[in-house]
Image 1 (tube, rainbow over the protein chains, first blue to last red):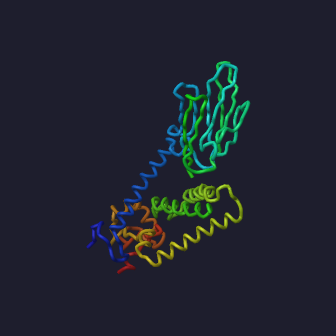
Image 2: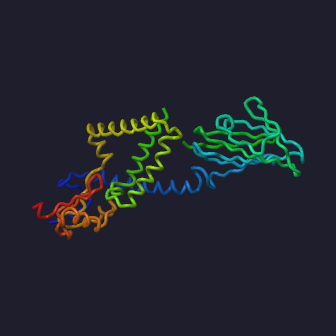
Image 3: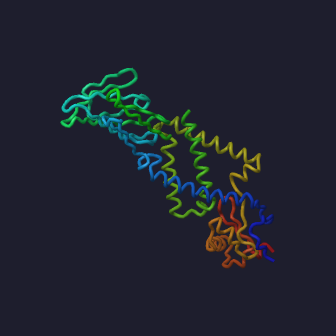
Length: 169
Length: 150
């Protein structure tokens, strides 16, 4: 007579542990859902390059605006776009500070600032503004560290923005 | 230091991922499974080695992987529960000529998979000729014929 009870453990020809086996099957199923979740979240940009990751901050008076990536990965390059408002056809000073600019390698600064000096642990840049008074600075950072890094961009005493990026291993 | 950490983290990550994939996933390797395996290897390689392509780094990574693998097999040797946890058990999916459909579904096996294995290993053509079909821990299906078992 065939034993039709599929849930009970067999002892011959192999000794089974159905409780454990059910747990394994459940783990496989939940694991699959978890992986689907991971794929979905990475499409959304939780692990870099996606809508969840792209951020823009603007200071209260709108004089400085930074577009940055909230999440990046170790070894990848990150683009920062910093837009500063000053007087037309003149110079605007921008102070870049924070661990982001100290601990990550700054690969390129485009366009080249007119003057670039250090100020304490921060970097003071003089940028040429266009006819409308705007200056845009493109910064490429190489993420050769892991963890949370924050940066500040300051134009004047009241015009500052803070932003941070998380670098995955 | 980071060679060892990289290799260790990758070992654990791959172990979890392949446990999720289940034992059947790479048991009967089709051409596509083989290609998939190669791609997984390619994706792993960069993270294992980083930007250090030196001989020393490669040896360190390989040494770490072997240490972990042998260490784990030693643990399994001494502890049945760990072995069961990591390797799973064999599961009966055909008994006395009857499919156990609930178990087959959860093991992601079709009747065709079992009959294919019966033909290949024992030359059996019908489920009624099978006494037991067992999914082994490595995902292969063992067939015990009714004549042989009686």
